[in-house]
Amino acid sequence: MRTQTLKLAILSYLTIVLLLWIARILAVSGIISLPFGFSAVGAQANLVTGGLFLALGPGILGMRVLNRRQRLESLRSRSNTNRAK
View 1: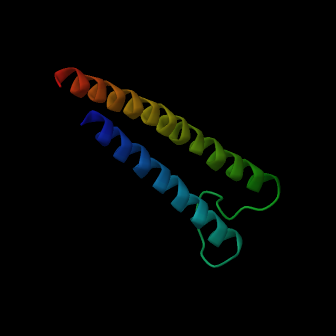
View 2: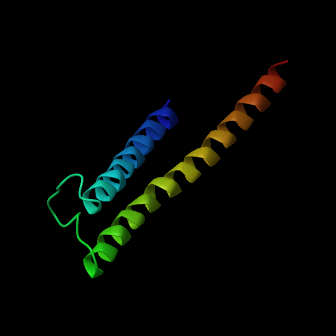
């Protein structure tokens, strides 16, 4: 149960980061106007893009750890089921 909650939290985090990427693309193309330098170009744009890229890291690592944890839990439940038979 905790694994499902963690998975939902991580997927929500990744969704928010993805929406920030989309907002950045729309701001740079001039379709929308955003505060905090999201529509910056040049050297500042590299900083914004790098920050968004680094924000993806914890979400991706969290999903890796969570998938490994789910795999171990499923193996344990299978071995317990086989023992019961």
